[in-house]
Image 1 (cartoon, rainbow, N blue to C red):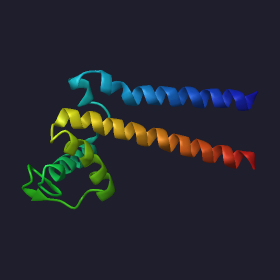
Image 2 (image 1 turned 45 degrees about the vertical axis):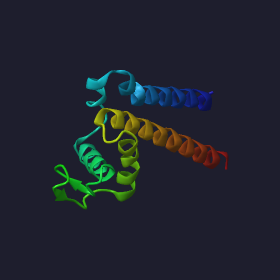
Image 3 (image 1 turned 180 degrees about the horizontal axis):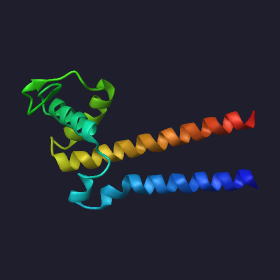
Image 4 (image 1 turned 30 degrees about the vertical axis):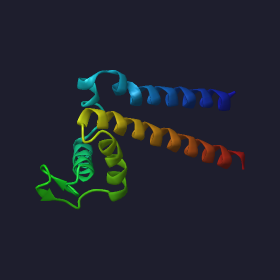
Length: 120
């Protein structure tokens, strides 16, 4: 019974986290720009946008070059900016969708690994 209760708590936590993660996508333009993105996140998104619109890995409208980012994440985050021609709100929705997908995949992989470990 303890295992079943624990699985219920985990499933409920997963659903809560998923709803919390996608909430900004359905909350309007003001909420989407205020949720989830930290100060470092804004830097990454600025660099990603500049990269997508042809300003390279830079900040300040392409005036200051930077190397203070995680390249793989920056390139991944630039995809919504490329697809939206640099439109910030549309790209933020794409960014949140990518992060939601990554979070779901990570949770499923970790859950699968945990089940494997607990069986042995």
